[in-house]
Amino acid sequence: MHNLEPVVVLVKYKIKKKKLDKAKTAISEYVDAVKKHEPRTAEYKVFQYEDDSTVFVHMMSFMDKDAKKTHEKSEHLKKLKKILVPISKGKAEYTNMVELKPIKSNENIEATHTPASHEPVK
Picture 1 (tube, helix red, strand yellow):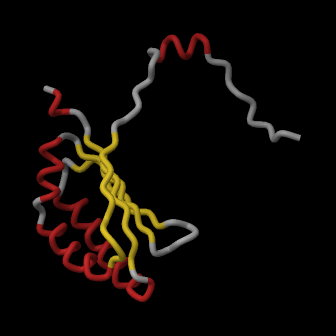
Picture 2 (cartoon, rainbow, N blue to C red; picture 1 turned 135 degrees about the vertical axis):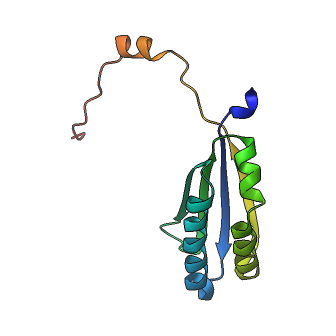
């Protein structure tokens, strides 16, 4: 039953500066479509680099490998790629992520954990 493990993927790419508005509109419509038509996509967020607005990162989390396959075959993804690929600089980087699981159980952590002070260092 390892197929039921969540699947997390990051996709990073760069858009030509003059095409940012076109890209943002397409991405916004696409994320809406993902949320409407992919109930097994647990989370889908898109970020822009603060210091370089041409760089975008999509962070997606699927409930399992089948949900990821459904996403990859979707019409809205095909439509987005048709728009973004010609206005991108270079190829998109895909990174498969795995969640870091706690080493100790929560009970042990609570028993030994002392809250850190959030006071500013002077």
